[in-house]
Image (tube, rainbow, N blue to C red):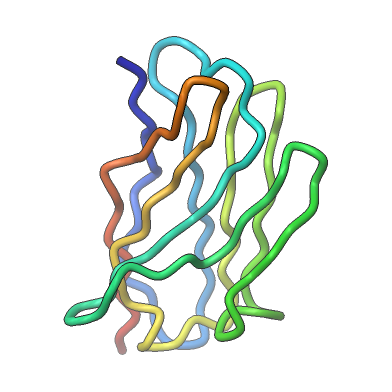
Length: 116
């Protein structure tokens, strides 16, 4: 079964930056049309952070607009999340997802902690 694998998050100081990446392990996913990042902060519901279509159309949740950038490498089936000006409230487990012709695939999540 295909599993998405996120890059390691980490501890970042407020105002800092971090880029996450995510790609399938093993075989490629057939017919990917949408890639996305979600996050779950302590005590909160899972939140959709950003999406990008195969055509490159992006959408962001309001709290990360102008700070986060989602991008993708279609050939490598890799999705990135560049996070700038990080704030303590960005602390969360970040998950990537890819929607393909045969369903949705999820990563196991990577912890990002913003703290001084």
